[in-house]
Length: 87
Image (cartoon, rainbow, N blue to C red; front, side, top):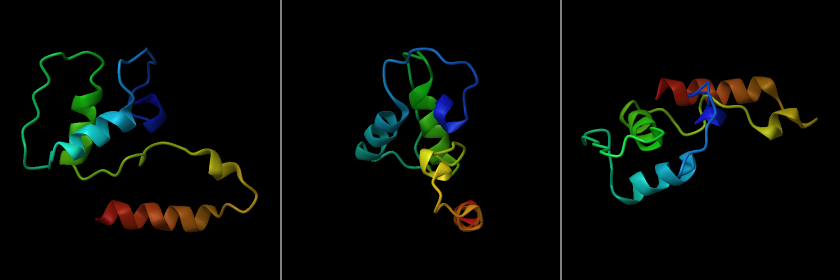
């Protein structure tokens, strides 16, 4: 979750955030469901579930390597993120 800008401290998690998101989506988890995580380990499933419940797109708070490419347009990227935020 540190790559997504959610967690400030980095520790080893038993599952990556993108896999947790994929598993929740594959299980049919929606924002109307209740998520209970009895393991309460690193909180990856709870945080991903919270993002789904709040309609926050995966990767919304993180930066990506392509942002350093010469052809990258900050204005276009900001526009895309603003459109996603409105939804």
